[in-house]
Length: 321
Image (cartoon, rainbow, N blue to C red):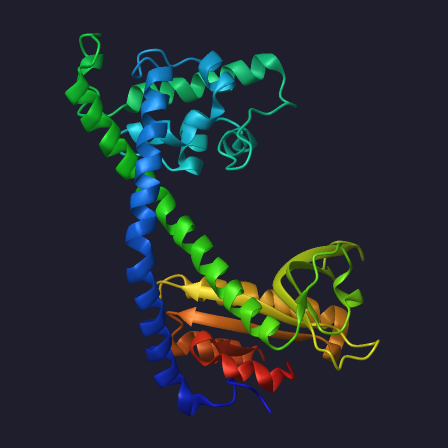
């Protein structure tokens, strides 16, 4: 017997309640998060403008020394340039641009030879200079220094553009953190403990759970080689036997209906990989909050993927937790 996939008479009401729950969280969280991000971003924009002499001294040397300015510089153009669009316009290595915009460690490619690196960084500078928004940088026309009022206006506009580009990832990360926190609180209340050791997912001790767990699977086209796929939560019930696998939970949230169709296909592919590797021993369940419509639910049910709504977490008990 399923948890929710075989109860279509509940779906319509569940969608309404899930959307209401997500909207309530968003209204409380998003404005504060955006303001905090905006304040921090204005400072980063001002620093980037100073380092480029207010866009008058763009050079390969600058980008090599300060690759972290590139996400900001993409927002100074008219129109702002998406990361992969910059790759095409400048005809440069995708790996170079993505490395420079790595959130944890911005850097230029260490493997690229010096001549090619300089050429590609110069190409990026040429595109940014050519497409710089003249309304944001009036001082470039007559090569003068900007005054304080111009700098404040320009920095604020660019910061808003940067915040608009990063707002969705910030919200997605916060929502994931909140969902995993809800699961953790529920499990710990039931006596489970978080296992932070680096053990294989199928070697977890009964009564433990882990986050962002790698599950080895066999994927077609890899010649029998194991490939790790990440799963948000792995839970080993206290009654598990030695041959049992942990329950695998994928936390999913959505702030609108537009993007869930692509996600459902990714989830189905992950489920198929797990099933083809572990057969009927594997349990894979979605944990949903937000805009998941009936079409999405019908698709997942047809693929044999069950789900638990965040607004009704008592359904976890149906998994034997």
